[in-house]
Image (tube, rainbow, N blue to C red; front, side, top):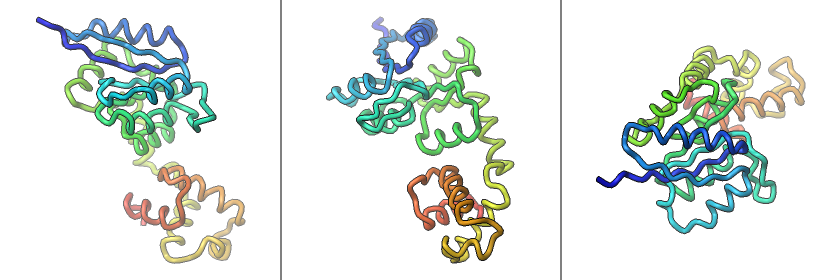
Length: 223
């Protein structure tokens, strides 16, 4: 019986990590033959994807979050690579592996990229990694424990949106223009601008307008 071949593009700036992932996956219980194509920075990863003419070339794409950038193309991290990979290989399973456990970073990745897999490196064992691989191959999404807990804490406590940020959102939603916010809240214009940048980060509309803030705030039930 011919083994099913799974083609995986792995990007990590530590070659030993890729070898480790490859070794673990060779023990999968699905009888799959693993074929790994490695890259070690944003530039080589971008160029490898760009030169491909087959949208079906990779079944999965594993991306480390922190990678040496490719500034010429505006690719600064695994997050930027993920955005490109989703366009280039729309049917591939995108998996992000990160050492970052900060709630906001994980929330932002989940909301902006919506990867098929999101794992904190310190969060999984070899068995857990195999479980994630098998779930992904079966069409499921795998979010590791730390990611789930961090995002749930962020959303349940709304800890990123403190009272001032909430007031800014409420005032904008009521029709107050940004330039007039200092008349309604005890903050300077520079402080308000910094908080608006935080709010845009939270809603993943970094280059958005006040209207984008209001739209996202309504969508998430803040106003």
